[in-house]
Length: 255
Image 1 (cartoon, one colour):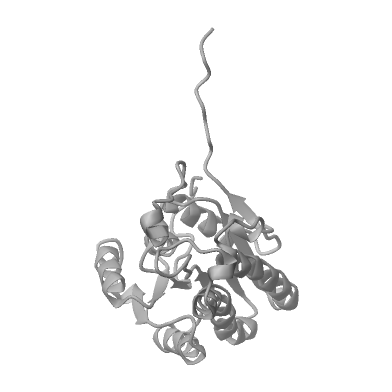
Image 2 (cartoon, rainbow, N blue to C red; image 1 turned 120 degrees about the vertical axis):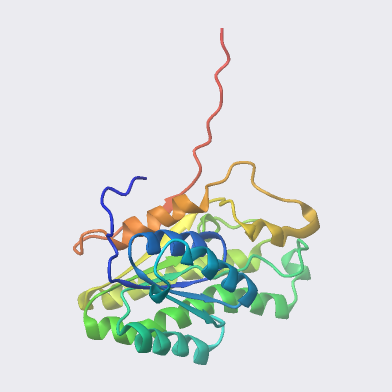
């Protein structure tokens, strides 16, 4: 995917959750290169600080706000919106990409899944999407303009064995996003969802000793490019539950 013009996000204020790695980090780099003002939100301070150092080599430090916050906490998501407004005065884009696959690095059947693990995954992925979305909505509605991109997964359309909590959370993100899109479109707020297939990120480390990893993956930069495309579409259109997957090629045998 090619970006045909530069600075398409100039002066736009973009919040990215899960910003210290994977899709979130790639969005941060791409958005900053497009002259956006970016707000990085993550619970891991060490990785967040390292990401900020990388970004300072790309864009103006004054255009970067780093916030160590948890998407699972209502007061912290409200703080995210408040600090963004204090620093930059408005909110134009939210990319909700914070998420976890499992706890402990062990594959578990649903029968062996504890309530604590279920809650951790649902609260991070689904409740975190709800809370981050809700926190920015009053500003976007008042502005009568805004873009929200919620990151679901191909596992939000097809369940996978040993991933029940994760799949449930990603199915939920799609339903939440579709409902919200209907609610706020009349205010000029656009809500879109992406469904990435296997992405080459540290996410796979959560599979622990099982060693499970996709053999063909998408670079996270490709997903970031898609998200940039979604938030810069003409205001009278949107893309519906956009699926992105690696192109699996195979060599033909010569006769």
